[in-house]
Image (cartoon, rainbow, N blue to C red; front, side, top):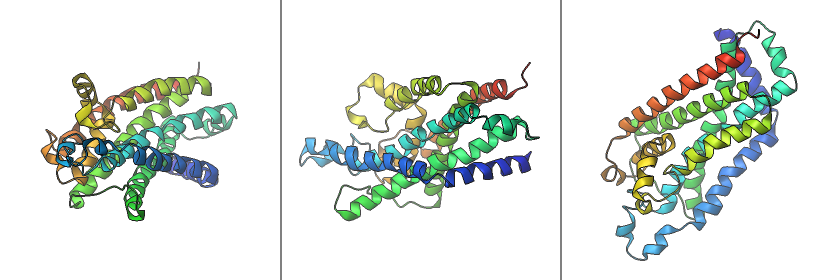
Length: 276
């Protein structure tokens, strides 16, 4: 099974590498978000010289752009997983998946290979966002200001947050892709999941200006949990504004991942099981 999974994963990676247009398009979205939205939404200017009053609004981040950039890492890690399931549907329409299914490879190998190859892009984009955000500060624009001493533990926590979030949504959307036949239906379903999750998270909105009910909803959102880990590790003042440590938020994220994995497994088994 491992051998089959690795062989199919290699095939998916080669197909991705031979499509530079898709890679360039996927890179364009986070760049536009950072340059357009990140630079334009300057909430800190509303407080004028009272910057001390603004720090609690962005939960210890040195400025809004830094807060926004950390949130965008989680935002992009989710949105990039949408196309993993869409690729499966197009493979079904063109008969590619049927040919792969006729090989000795098991259903688990087919699903696992798609997942392994698919999560590389969202994970890479998330860290690209962080790197690009730091780079913007070097050219005279608003940039990500990392005020904490990011050690090995902090780097591992940030990496785990991005990976768990990406794997969680990639597995769910991949399973939906196997279960649905038409691309129009697929995008309708995943957007019904994706948009509410993203828009009820604290990835983009300054926490201090949110109404109480929104904070309650956002606190349990998996995107918020991942982003809070990133902010806790990047900003030295952040621990004063969060009730729990990064490990607690990672634990909550793992609980979400376990639940979504159960749903994804059920969908995938039903879609990839033998036809009667």
